[in-house]
Length: 116
Image (tube, rainbow, N blue to C red):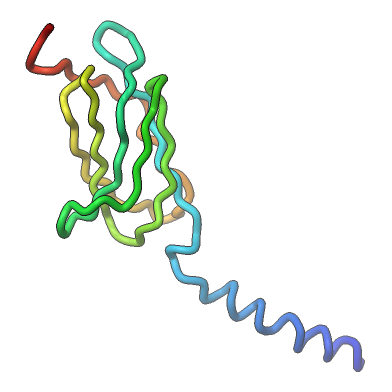
């Protein structure tokens, strides 16, 4: 009985922390595969922006058309995709209810307005 009470007192703070953890501590990942109309895989940048002021929250570059970003915000956000190989693209992203992975699938990017 005494060991059960000690175990209960030891585990109670963990239980309270686990059930009241803030949403931003729950990992969320956004991923996509980008292609060009020619079928090539572009390189570029993927950035998560705040919708309030377009400030950069996180970002990374990609070389093979595939990106994966860890999301730390608990509100909807903007996803900006930039490259010299396609038009800059801005997407509004709503957070899913399960808060695990946002897979945007395969996105065919539009060619840039200029040509070399």
